[in-house]
Amino acid sequence: MHLDLATTSAAHQAESVARLKDLGATPADVGQGDVPWTVLADPEGNVFCVLEPREIYRDTGPIAAVVVDCADPRAMARFWGEAMDWTLHEVGDDHAVLRSAKGVGPYLEFLRMTDVKTVWNRVHLDLMPYPGDDQEAEVARLGALGATGADVGQGDVPWKVLADPEGNEFCVLTPG
Image 1 (cartoon, helix red, strand yellow):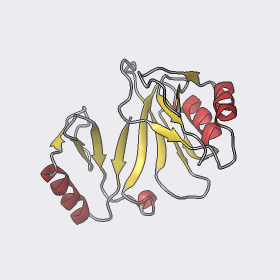
Image 2 (tube, one colour; image 1 turned 180 degrees about the horizontal axis):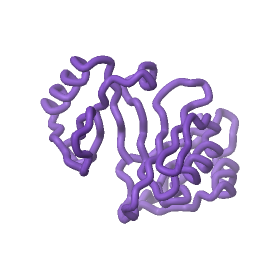
Image 3 (cartoon, rainbow, N blue to C red; image 1 turned 120 degrees about the horizontal axis):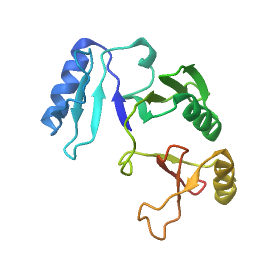
């Protein structure tokens, strides 16, 4: 799982990359080859991309997308679309794209990868039930969709840690 950062022009992309390097980011090679975006790693080694300007991301804010590597983009889009009630924008064998039904914020993108997940994700999603909803009922609803309980060493906390059908951890917070 990683973040894709949006830019508004080639100059903005170059400025963003320079600023992020000044903050401690380093170039990263994840086998991307010759691409128009820049792959960096933060000081703790978390990889992220600074994208070239793309019309689709012009109104997302600084985070264009949260990208999840997965074995089955269609199944993941089905699960997360129902889990969050987001709109499916694209789906194929190699990728799927969701976004809030209100058309705001970043996209959630699933990319087919052959690597097997072996460690917990340092980047994960936190889901906030709607005000007045019951956290336990939401956990049960997500379980019916295919989520399972997960222990990442969280101890006694007010949120619930679950894993999606491919083992990606996420949290269900207490309703606000």
